[in-house]
Image (cartoon, rainbow, N blue to C red):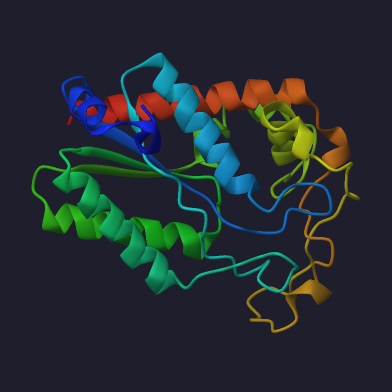
Length: 237
């Protein structure tokens, strides 16, 4: 049940079936020369919608902005601060709670460390505020990392490489514009940098040439399976 497409009566009827909701969180961020800026958001939305086809489950409107430190200087990346993200997610959670939702899963397609920490902080705020709410914060990578390891040929593949290119080739093939060279960032450890593109010019972390739609479909299925397991765990608490 995709909340933006529901009427008021449909939303009310949905609450009779479930109190669980997935909130897709992404980013507007560069993904090499070949993938769209909305890649992280599209992946999270696709998984949430596929999960909702398998069981009664609300899917909230996606959050298209995230905290993007390493890619903040690349063309097209629009980052927000950790404070903004934390307050936004906490407010969205409170709004969903007011409407009767009690089991909230924040599913992020963007796996940045500070981004994830902001989501967790927001989740903790919600737990402190409401006694009868259950919250999970998960990345797509977490949900498929172990079971999908055999599908990936590129060691350390991460951003706009084999995994994400395969995902978008499967879900939105018309938005893939060719490919990008294999690349890995070369950031000096522990050093905060002003000119990040100097150490990561192409914005790719992995090898897009190893991607194909079949891999993307298999990875997506694993993420959907993992997401449903998270929802089941929340509802059993």
